[in-house]
Image (cartoon, rainbow, N blue to C red; front, side, top):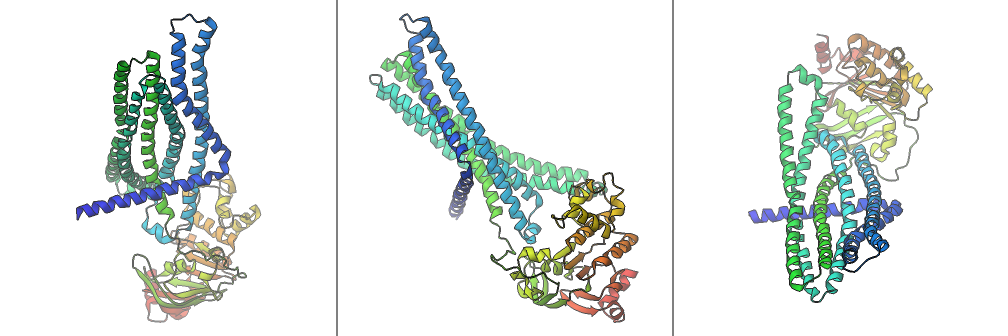
Length: 596
């Protein structure tokens, strides 16, 4: 039973490695536009490898023969032979330099492509994915894993171009030098030892892949721990949790260090094992050279050629280890890129005329992926030009209602229509362009005030931004900022108060001017005075729009056209405030609780 389990694990690992190789080849294939850089990399890399493997040993023999010859040499000829190594090594160094620089350029292209693919994928993934995935893991894949692929690519491609050329050239040099000697063919048996040195590479390379995969998971945990702590700086200090957080980080950091060292122990054993075989080969070569009476300069050239044959194998072993690093990182990235995109646009959907904002739920049933049921055969309608308040206890389905309208999730049963069009048959771009959302915690960028307002409509002019800020009542505090609209407001608007952040979110909604407006607990962080000012400005935005006001606060509810009371995913009451407050129902109990 255990043998079958181990075999399945090995088969799974082999399958993952094959997928990783195919994925890497696909990214390399994306470099087709850089064909001249690729040609240059290949040319300089092969030239550098050939000059090392064949040029250096053969030149060394020729120089040694003439410089240490018993015959008298002219001064000019001696200077010529002494200068040859300078020319050869200079040409070898220059070609290696150009090959490495071109590879760095190509590696950066691959890194940009990988990170762009990850970022674009994250923009298309459903909210359900982010509910079950830690942000730190995603950051780790986009930065750490992608950077590891880029570094490994440069290293791998450098070795893969130069080292095989060096190995083949060195083998040709050994063959050429040995066949020049009587009985020199016996020395060719040394090439058999060169082949044997590949076995430790294969074994330890697989170990590197397995161990590095675990190390990458641990560094994701480390990134998550760091991200989580930075996002809760205030709470950590308020609850005196510094030591607890230190302990958790220390434990996670230790786990990553152990996983990383385990990878290093396997990776760094590759080179010594190859060097051990190289020592055996040189020892045998020395013994055979003595028996066969091979001249000193020829023996020196053969040893140098042997070195240049083992050195590529040693570096190919390092290359194989780096390849396992990058394949394990790429497998984690490919796992992310393979995540299903739901909801997803159907290609070729026609654009409809501008939507008015009539929303209808017909027999809608919806359950989250974790099994939490929200709606069952829900029927509900919203008319354009009217304002609606959605109220109810926690878990009643208020926010889920907004999420379904925006198609953050797809319903399992029934349909939702806007102006008679099934939202699944509308493009996501057109649907979401027709909805302005003011959430409970508006997301603000570490950018200028103008850039944050323009986020609602990137093509808006500066005049449009100023007008939206005036309508949202935001210019009164914007004008007091050091640089006005050009003031950078800090990460998530840290330099602004809660009311000021909500005003900027409202300015976005004014700028977007969508026919459907959804306010999801938009005033929960405001005091009573700020909330009244907020709704005073908001009344201007209600005109000619379908407004859905999700709130636990009842200050503004008498001013909306209709109130919808949800409980357990069902509509239990519906009507105006004056009507519902007279009924002995959930709305009156919620209102009384709020007043108290």
